[in-house]
Amino acid sequence: NCKSGTCMTRACPCFAAARECDPDICKRCAHTAETIAHERRDGWPFTDICEPVPAPPKVPVEATAARTDPNEQCGNMKLYLRQHKHACLGLSGVEGWGCFLKNGARKNELLGEYTGELISQTEADRRGKIYDKLNSSFLFNLNDQWVLDAAVRGNKLKFANHSATPNCYAKVLMVRGDHRVGIFAKEHIAPGEELTYDYRYEADKAPDWALKPTEMED
Image 1: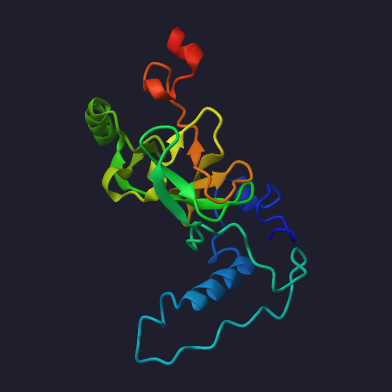
Image 2: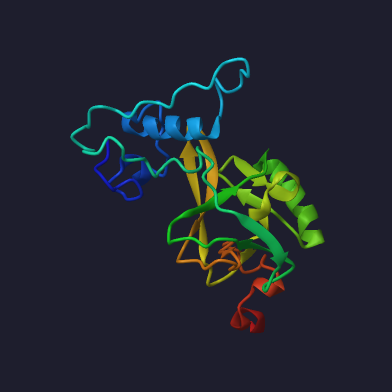
């Protein structure tokens, strides 16, 4: 259990361990998942159209020593609950297509998930050679074994461009046993602003447009 108002701080043991809260384990967080699933009519029993819509889940009647407000919702399950921001495509001010945020976001707020095909590092190395020739790659390293390839199965966030002074950051989180990538706001982002984050290019592998002027001179 975490104390009131500490969902997105290191005071929450799940957040500190780079994982989202699990409603099957974190008792106080389970009510948040149940409530949002009911509001969306998501999953059982809403998959059975013959059943009447059930009543919403009851609010816990007892508070724990950690959380004094039974109505407080967990803020560390946004990837699991698909609580994403509305992203749009447009011509980038950096290179090619870009990803823009429709309604803005606060610092450290989740913007969305970087999705794609899950492939091995060996397959990623093979595809990477092809993508390098095309000068277009959407590979994202999850860990030492697996890579996400967003070229075909990715979403709009794959068009978020690289920047040395980004307004977003990517973070790999453990979500119910799986590594998943969340894109978060590094600072306050205004409505309509283009999203960028640091691709962490190696100097000898970065495209010309991603290099700083001093690096290009060298």
